[in-house]
Image 1 (spheres, rainbow, N blue to C red):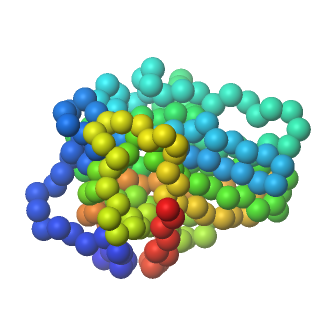
Image 2 (spheres, helix red, strand yellow; image 1 turned 90 degrees about the vertical axis):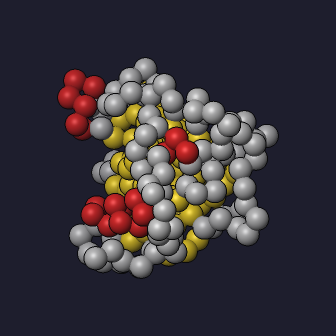
Length: 212
């Protein structure tokens, strides 16, 4: 059975991901930035979301991750070992509409084992009010849910805000060059509440954290 969650089932028919974005027509999308930083380094050029032109598997909307720069570094990447000849790390991973939800596997590395790293998710193209999102820490067996503030609503249909709006932050201790594994689960409340559980070995109660 699923663990407790702040997202309750609405009892309505499943809603496709395309209906969860801030949109006026089926061509609109939602998108988030994933940023990570430590005392001496930052990686902020990583994006996930839903795009009406995205295709299953690899497509031109998915951008490979370049190697880290010399010196101190922090690195976040979407990983796709299942993509065969395209397997590897990516800095942009957009999915197509039509499903109840999607899961993005990410790995965090840094040049210094043991240093504190903050991971942040922020809206670039606003998501609709029915989109639920959960960050799973696969190393610790824990999770954090995005909790919207009262009155939160999409800025406008398919438009980018003047600046990214931070919605969730999470701190971890780096394993250095060994990957720290996490997942991002986004979609309907039912998908996030139940689908994300399958990735963790033991039941857990998600922390309830929302940022402004």
